[in-house]
Image 1 (cartoon, rainbow, N blue to C red):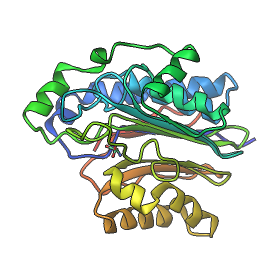
Image 2 (image 1 turned 30 degrees about the vertical axis):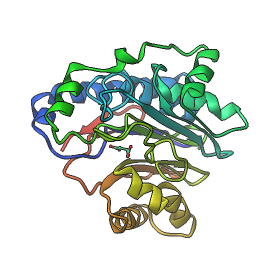
Image 3 (image 1 turned 180 degrees about the vertical axis):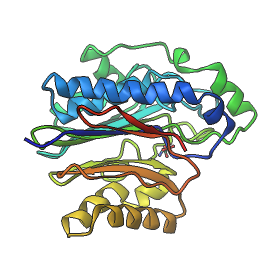
Image 4 (image 1 turned 90 degrees about the vertical axis):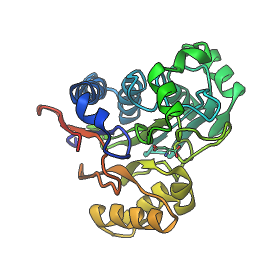
Length: 289
Ligand code: ASP
């Protein structure tokens, strides 16, 4: 048996006033996500179910850029994407540009059983509905807060959510969920639902990334981290190297990673990245710089 660990992030971005003013809400949301994932582990569920539970909790929190309250596209609509990966067999699932599925990460996790990895658009929502996942009218994801941010061109990036976990059996898993970048063109897909870019898990590491998606895609960020660790690079160094590579591709951001020994690294190159760590028998540790 290994000692489990669960890590979550609430997106790399600028240090805006809201983070300070609504600090206790952010804190509660991160603790809630860690507790949801921790409960799943205590109930004997696997790492993949723990990351799904943690990310679902964050998707339901309207200040994060995922699920209800996600950032808006240039025309004021919400388009959501998510992915999940199980390290033991590299099963991977993702959905992109969904508009009705309340918890996109649950749809991504449902894709783990399918022969395809990624479904997009209406068909991804239809798949989620057929799997019994709650559907909402697209307008219900739009919040007044995000309307204001779009109309004032508030520097509003950040808030994407993710989780990585090592469970008591030594299994690793990762999941990421986002509404993308504020004001993005309709139909844009960033790194979050792209396996190997925003999310990766194998037998040695589980990774969830956040930041300027195009740079993470071009860097092959999450997979690169797995490859570096597999070739003997230490976790911190590997994580820093990945962010350097992302910077060379013109982007900044952050990531969370856990390895098979339970070591974690949570670096970011932006001003802020809310994040938290849960280990059994210890109070959840949350940092909102
Ligand atoms: N990586 C996400 C995207 O590019 C956004 C973010 O992490 O803030 O869609």
